[in-house]
Length: 235
Image 1 (cartoon, rainbow, N blue to C red):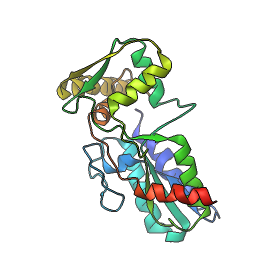
Image 2 (image 1 turned 60 degrees about the vertical axis):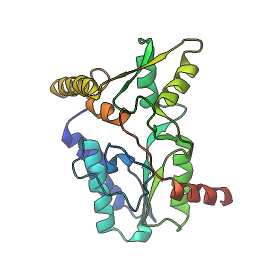
Image 3 (image 1 turned 180 degrees about the horizontal axis):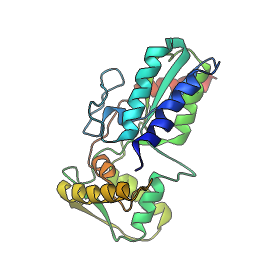
Image 4 (image 1 turned 180 degrees about the vertical axis):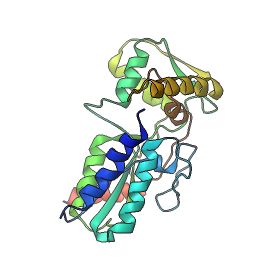
């Protein structure tokens, strides 16, 4: 949610400012959203193109920032990290939204053909930190992009149930699936009203962006990340 100009200031203009500082190297935290929100099946950083029609200003300016860095900095001055759905202790975003929904629902709700069996691209925050450390301290990944995603294949339903077990022990949840068009309609209403009201958070879940996210198989290769984590063990 929020105006385009705010996303541009935070996710694009700020990157140009940081790149101008006399640092040795810029480790840029981008997002796997630069690939778009649709079904993937293990593709890697070098075979996945940028999304040509981003769903919102967040991926749009992440893409613009990556392009700007590649155009204006030599390869030894940057590394790009593309985390997926980051979670961990202190998470104030994804986990909180799931907890808030499960607190008032007796069921885990999925949308579309996958019925909750699509891969949820969980990325432990510890991995993000470790890969960032390697990127900053070593030259192995200079000028490259690195996907960050847990190597374990976790379905969306399994991730929801993991959160439920932690925050609602003993509470039983059944899983139900609604047609994608129902989720899309709800998401469009939430997003449209939120934007009209000038909110920076969704009025209610799901937002339109969230519907596409939970209805897609976000399965990316993490081979380069695994090489970085092996390097981390030696530092």
